[in-house]
Length: 242
Image (cartoon, rainbow, N blue to C red; front, top):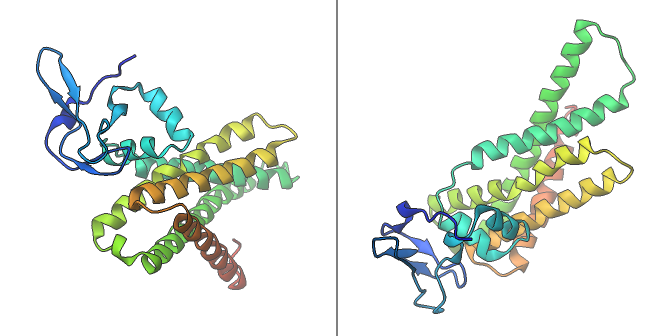
């Protein structure tokens, strides 16, 4: 069925065609009395953004399938501003998973307050480690992309848009909680699949944001992982419990 069309989006502005990534001045035209017509892209002669008629659930499913059109719709043609909160919540999920694994490895069941405070501090430490690793990963990606495609990251707004895309594309980490709650013999395999899914989402976000081929984003992610592991190893050599 038809979803609710965002009327605020009808104002003139910078939008993108979800098919060819071409620029457009409007997503649809309102002829009053409920008569709406989706704008046609001048470059590919297809609807600029068919998703403005779709239900949010269908858009989410297409995003989970890593379709470039869904990513362009979310990043360029909507005004979603939850990337910061989503990032913090994903980091909390990852910290909780690490903290839970740490508790499973500890056999100490002493109910003393000191022990409880130590366990609480362990959770904050896991959150800090997860934040450090993700920050290092993103820095590695930015350095690689700036080195390989400097023309794509000339302005501050380009960096901000790419950072927003990367933060939004980490939504797969939310699956960590169900994977832990519904614990079974295949939990390690599920966690590995979640990690791969997040990396695929990151790659698609980079590709859509900078309009690149499939190879360069994967190079950036590969060097991002190397930089992340390098930073962790450096802190471990310095004596930090990371």
